[in-house]
Image 1 (spheres, rainbow, N blue to C red):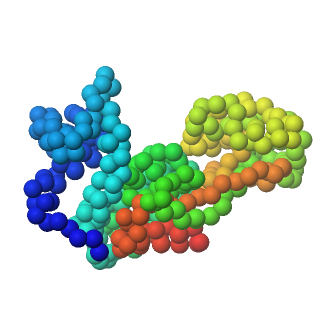
Image 2: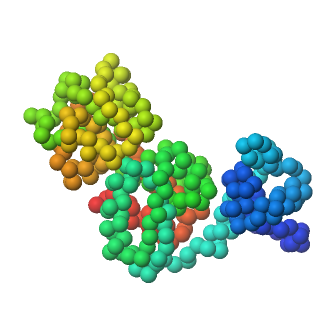
Image 3: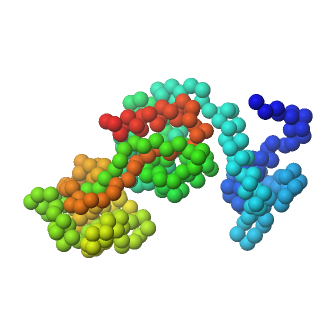
Length: 305
């Protein structure tokens, strides 16, 4: 174990590290001050002391805010990890009793995971942990790691292909795609490729494009389809399908959710297409948090059932 030089550290205001982290995450003096509950002059004074402590400007004022220097970038990850460990040591619950806990769990989810997981999760919470609360933060696979690092969410649920060494990803299941359409336009059997190509389609594209993963998969076979409409999220899809001839190609678990509620019909996709993983992603600081472990296990069990 490394030796801590208590005498030297006693002369350092460790609260300055909190100011540094707030400046690094917001890169704006006023927003950093609001984040840590200090006045702007007090935050500015703390920055001056940080510069003296580290013998570097650390943050340069620009028209867009405060730009970190190479020295600040070098320090940022280390200081952030130290603060997370201190926070965990002070505030983590040593024991978690579901029936008694009134803890608020913050989940990062996209509209797919909201529709597939939230109803089932809340049903289980009503039985197992009636006082526990869920706060959902809208996110996607690109933003989730950043929200975890900023301690704005406890875990992310969805497709999480990118993450850092200090994150843990747990696979829930592999998702695949199927077709969904109105029952009144029911095909005599599973949709054939020729029927699929001839039909008009509804595309869900968060990027608001008219070309999606399906179109790229078809292009590999020198095929194309007619995308008649593109929408940015899944929620509107069943409202459109019940009144049109359109076909939507969607993740199977989402289709299962829609079919349970709407008069819609599902059919296998008539060509090969790669699916995607559905995962839980969390920061390693929560590995041993008893409440966190309980929630992760509950989400995993929901998938098994």
